[in-house]
Length: 272
Image (cartoon, rainbow, N blue to C red; front, top):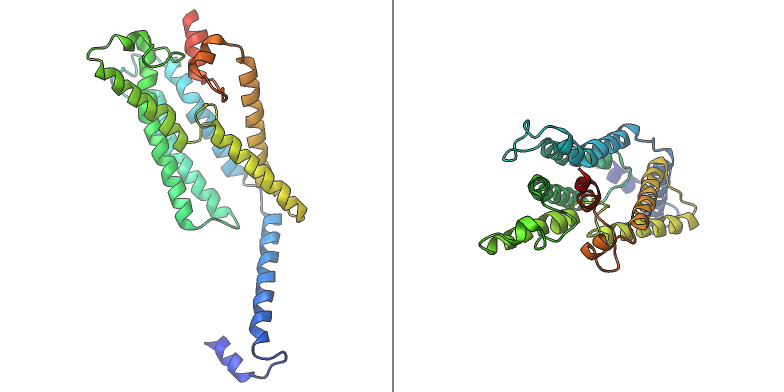
């Protein structure tokens, strides 16, 4: 109301009544752009969030199958959740919380609806993966071999009635395809295409913004270099197992990214 009163008191300002709103709009827009650039340039490095992200990924995600194999089976019977399952449950709660905290600190964000749908999709995919992965890990103790297909596994192909095999294939689909696609585990061939597309989209955006004299802040650089390092590690992993005939049969096609569990059951567990 006060601003409107001032405009009524000065109807004959220089440039005409029609030019003043346009000039004000351009000035406001210019100020907003400057403010965004200044905020991006002075944004502090979110050491706490990135540290928690890294820690929980290495401990709760990467470490959960290792913990499941290390802890005695007597402590976690096969008909009860394993220690890896509890790690996964904690991951499903902590990760979306950290993502939302990171969005809160961002100077510019996507619409709230997009953020909510993305986080909900992540939680749903990780929850689907929790159930499927829990059963798949427990099947290891019964002789299940992850480097073979579901129907080729010795403990599966002789099941009666045969419709039980279809149920296990459905479980495998939920775990390895649907769950992983809604999640973001990179070392799985099923979603490597999504990862590589995201990385090159980020690279194209960085190069495009660089032409405008816009550069990533410390947080953007950390995320970009994390993607680049991940791509390098996956490339080394693929190169190491490139000529493995068994894994080649398990993962046919152009995209060849063997799963760690398949490598474990083929080359490690068979030695013990």
